[in-house]
Image (cartoon, rainbow, N blue to C red; front, side, top):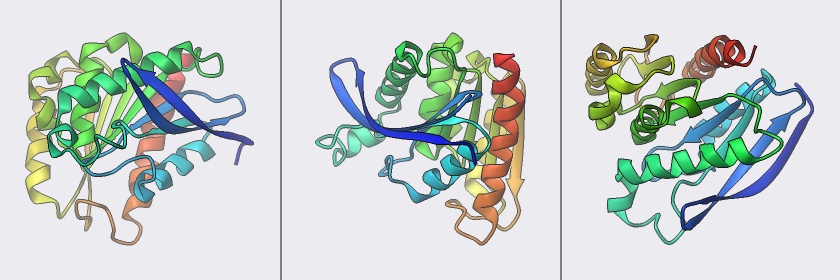
Length: 217
Protein backbone atom coordinates (compact mmCIF):
# COMPACT_ATOMS: atom_id res chain seq x y z
CA UNK A 1 0.00 0.00 0.00
CA UNK A 2 1.36 3.50 -0.80
CA UNK A 3 2.68 5.59 2.07
CA UNK A 4 -0.29 7.56 3.37
CA UNK A 5 -0.60 11.03 4.85
CA UNK A 6 -3.81 11.03 6.91
CA UNK A 7 -5.14 14.14 8.60
CA UNK A 8 -8.38 15.56 9.96
CA UNK A 9 -9.52 18.62 8.01
CA UNK A 10 -12.15 21.31 8.35
CA UNK A 11 -13.84 22.26 5.09
CA UNK A 12 -15.54 25.62 4.83
CA UNK A 13 -18.60 25.38 2.57
CA UNK A 14 -20.52 28.62 2.49
CA UNK A 15 -21.25 29.59 6.09
CA UNK A 16 -20.65 26.14 7.61
CA UNK A 17 -17.55 24.26 8.70
CA UNK A 18 -17.58 20.56 7.93
CA UNK A 19 -15.32 17.96 9.54
CA UNK A 20 -13.57 15.39 7.41
CA UNK A 21 -10.65 12.98 7.11
CA UNK A 22 -8.29 13.42 4.17
CA UNK A 23 -6.00 10.54 3.23
CA UNK A 24 -3.35 11.36 0.66
CA UNK A 25 -1.00 8.74 -0.77
CA UNK A 26 2.26 9.76 -2.37
CA UNK A 27 1.82 10.50 -6.09
CA UNK A 28 -1.97 10.24 -5.85
CA UNK A 29 -3.74 9.79 -9.16
CA UNK A 30 -6.95 11.53 -8.07
CA UNK A 31 -9.17 12.35 -5.09
CA UNK A 32 -12.43 10.54 -4.30
CA UNK A 33 -14.92 12.63 -2.32
CA UNK A 34 -17.51 10.58 -0.41
CA UNK A 35 -21.18 11.57 -0.12
CA UNK A 36 -22.75 9.48 2.65
CA UNK A 37 -26.32 8.26 2.87
CA UNK A 38 -28.98 9.49 5.27
CA UNK A 39 -28.04 9.16 8.92
CA UNK A 40 -24.42 8.35 8.08
CA UNK A 41 -21.17 10.30 8.06
CA UNK A 42 -17.42 10.12 7.75
CA UNK A 43 -17.22 7.23 10.23
CA UNK A 44 -19.39 4.92 8.06
CA UNK A 45 -17.61 1.53 8.23
CA UNK A 46 -18.73 0.62 4.71
CA UNK A 47 -17.45 3.82 3.14
CA UNK A 48 -14.25 3.61 5.15
CA UNK A 49 -13.69 0.10 3.81
CA UNK A 50 -14.16 1.34 0.23
CA UNK A 51 -11.91 4.33 0.94
CA UNK A 52 -9.10 2.08 2.20
CA UNK A 53 -9.37 -0.04 -0.94
CA UNK A 54 -9.13 3.08 -3.11
CA UNK A 55 -6.17 4.37 -1.10
CA UNK A 56 -4.35 1.09 -1.74
CA UNK A 57 -4.85 1.74 -5.46
CA UNK A 58 -3.28 5.19 -5.23
CA UNK A 59 -6.27 7.47 -4.72
CA UNK A 60 -6.63 10.21 -2.14
CA UNK A 61 -9.94 10.11 -0.28
CA UNK A 62 -11.97 12.70 1.59
CA UNK A 63 -14.55 11.30 4.00
CA UNK A 64 -16.68 14.24 5.05
CA UNK A 65 -19.68 14.97 7.24
CA UNK A 66 -21.95 16.93 4.89
CA UNK A 67 -23.98 18.18 7.88
CA UNK A 68 -22.78 19.95 10.98
CA UNK A 69 -23.36 18.11 14.26
CA UNK A 70 -26.29 20.36 15.18
CA UNK A 71 -27.92 19.60 11.80
CA UNK A 72 -27.51 15.84 11.80
CA UNK A 73 -30.67 15.17 13.83
CA UNK A 74 -32.85 17.32 11.56
CA UNK A 75 -34.56 14.84 9.22
CA UNK A 76 -35.44 17.61 6.78
CA UNK A 77 -31.76 18.36 6.25
CA UNK A 78 -30.76 14.69 6.15
CA UNK A 79 -32.98 14.28 3.08
CA UNK A 80 -32.39 17.76 1.60
CA UNK A 81 -30.60 16.71 -1.59
CA UNK A 82 -30.21 20.32 -2.76
CA UNK A 83 -28.43 21.21 0.49
CA UNK A 84 -26.22 18.11 0.40
CA UNK A 85 -25.24 18.85 -3.21
CA UNK A 86 -24.37 22.42 -2.18
CA UNK A 87 -22.08 21.06 0.53
CA UNK A 88 -20.48 18.57 -1.86
CA UNK A 89 -19.74 21.35 -4.34
CA UNK A 90 -18.27 23.40 -1.51
CA UNK A 91 -15.98 20.48 -0.64
CA UNK A 92 -14.96 20.03 -4.28
CA UNK A 93 -14.08 23.73 -4.45
CA UNK A 94 -12.04 23.35 -1.25
CA UNK A 95 -10.11 20.41 -2.76
CA UNK A 96 -9.31 22.46 -5.85
CA UNK A 97 -7.87 25.24 -3.67
CA UNK A 98 -5.79 23.07 -1.35
CA UNK A 99 -2.17 22.79 -2.59
CA UNK A 100 -1.99 19.03 -1.92
CA UNK A 101 -5.08 18.23 -4.01
CA UNK A 102 -5.47 21.19 -6.37
CA UNK A 103 -4.02 19.37 -9.38
CA UNK A 104 -5.83 16.06 -8.80
CA UNK A 105 -9.00 15.13 -10.69
CA UNK A 106 -12.00 14.57 -8.42
CA UNK A 107 -14.41 11.65 -8.32
CA UNK A 108 -17.60 11.36 -6.27
CA UNK A 109 -18.58 8.17 -4.45
CA UNK A 110 -22.19 8.43 -3.31
CA UNK A 111 -24.08 5.95 -1.14
CA UNK A 112 -27.88 5.76 -0.83
CA UNK A 113 -29.27 9.33 -0.70
CA UNK A 114 -25.70 10.63 -1.02
CA UNK A 115 -25.68 9.31 -4.59
CA UNK A 116 -28.53 11.67 -5.43
CA UNK A 117 -26.50 14.56 -4.03
CA UNK A 118 -23.38 13.45 -5.95
CA UNK A 119 -25.25 13.29 -9.25
CA UNK A 120 -26.90 16.65 -8.73
CA UNK A 121 -23.51 18.16 -7.87
CA UNK A 122 -21.96 16.55 -10.96
CA UNK A 123 -24.66 18.11 -13.14
CA UNK A 124 -24.43 21.55 -11.58
CA UNK A 125 -20.63 21.86 -11.77
CA UNK A 126 -19.45 19.40 -14.44
CA UNK A 127 -15.94 20.85 -14.61
CA UNK A 128 -15.34 19.87 -10.96
CA UNK A 129 -15.75 16.10 -11.31
CA UNK A 130 -14.25 13.47 -13.59
CA UNK A 131 -16.21 10.36 -12.52
CA UNK A 132 -19.08 9.26 -10.28
CA UNK A 133 -19.77 5.94 -8.54
CA UNK A 134 -23.05 5.17 -6.76
CA UNK A 135 -23.40 2.35 -4.17
CA UNK A 136 -26.96 1.27 -3.48
CA UNK A 137 -27.85 4.76 -4.58
CA UNK A 138 -31.00 6.77 -5.01
CA UNK A 139 -30.25 8.48 -8.34
CA UNK A 140 -33.97 9.12 -8.70
CA UNK A 141 -33.54 11.89 -6.11
CA UNK A 142 -31.53 13.76 -8.75
CA UNK A 143 -33.95 13.00 -11.59
CA UNK A 144 -34.22 16.59 -12.93
CA UNK A 145 -30.42 16.74 -13.22
CA UNK A 146 -29.53 13.32 -14.66
CA UNK A 147 -29.52 14.32 -18.32
CA UNK A 148 -26.99 17.06 -17.52
CA UNK A 149 -24.40 14.77 -15.92
CA UNK A 150 -21.33 14.53 -18.17
CA UNK A 151 -18.94 12.61 -15.86
CA UNK A 152 -18.75 8.84 -16.51
CA UNK A 153 -21.12 7.27 -13.99
CA UNK A 154 -21.17 3.76 -12.50
CA UNK A 155 -24.26 2.56 -10.65
CA UNK A 156 -23.74 -0.44 -8.32
CA UNK A 157 -26.80 -2.15 -6.82
CA UNK A 158 -27.35 -5.30 -4.77
CA UNK A 159 -29.10 -8.13 -6.61
CA UNK A 160 -31.61 -8.53 -3.78
CA UNK A 161 -32.31 -4.79 -3.48
CA UNK A 162 -35.27 -4.99 -5.88
CA UNK A 163 -36.86 -1.51 -5.56
CA UNK A 164 -33.47 0.19 -5.86
CA UNK A 165 -32.59 -1.89 -8.93
CA UNK A 166 -35.66 -0.47 -10.69
CA UNK A 167 -34.76 3.09 -9.64
CA UNK A 168 -31.25 2.66 -10.98
CA UNK A 169 -32.40 1.17 -14.27
CA UNK A 170 -34.69 4.14 -14.79
CA UNK A 171 -31.87 6.54 -13.92
CA UNK A 172 -29.49 4.75 -16.27
CA UNK A 173 -31.90 5.38 -19.13
CA UNK A 174 -31.92 9.10 -18.33
CA UNK A 175 -28.15 9.49 -18.12
CA UNK A 176 -26.51 10.60 -21.37
CA UNK A 177 -22.89 10.35 -20.14
CA UNK A 178 -20.69 7.22 -20.35
CA UNK A 179 -22.50 4.92 -17.94
CA UNK A 180 -22.79 1.40 -16.56
CA UNK A 181 -25.01 -0.51 -14.14
CA UNK A 182 -23.52 -3.39 -12.15
CA UNK A 183 -25.77 -5.67 -10.10
CA UNK A 184 -23.94 -7.61 -7.37
CA UNK A 185 -25.62 -11.03 -6.97
CA UNK A 186 -26.95 -11.90 -3.51
CA UNK A 187 -26.36 -8.43 -2.04
CA UNK A 188 -28.95 -6.41 -0.15
CA UNK A 189 -29.04 -2.63 0.21
CA UNK A 190 -26.11 -2.28 2.62
CA UNK A 191 -23.91 -4.97 1.01
CA UNK A 192 -23.53 -6.73 4.35
CA UNK A 193 -23.27 -10.20 2.83
CA UNK A 194 -19.77 -11.77 2.79
CA UNK A 195 -17.67 -10.63 -0.15
CA UNK A 196 -20.23 -8.19 -1.58
CA UNK A 197 -18.66 -4.96 -0.29
CA UNK A 198 -15.30 -6.16 -1.62
CA UNK A 199 -16.94 -6.38 -5.04
CA UNK A 200 -18.25 -2.83 -4.69
CA UNK A 201 -14.79 -1.56 -3.79
CA UNK A 202 -13.22 -3.44 -6.68
CA UNK A 203 -15.69 -2.12 -9.25
CA UNK A 204 -15.32 1.43 -7.89
CA UNK A 205 -11.54 1.19 -8.05
CA UNK A 206 -11.66 -0.05 -11.64
CA UNK A 207 -13.99 2.81 -12.63
CA UNK A 208 -11.89 5.50 -11.00
CA UNK A 209 -8.69 4.03 -12.42
CA UNK A 210 -10.16 4.18 -15.89
CA UNK A 211 -11.69 7.64 -15.70
CA UNK A 212 -9.75 9.63 -13.10
CA UNK A 213 -6.37 8.43 -14.33
CA UNK A 214 -7.32 9.12 -17.95
CA UNK A 215 -8.53 12.58 -16.94
CA UNK A 216 -5.18 13.22 -15.27
CA UNK A 217 -2.96 11.99 -18.09
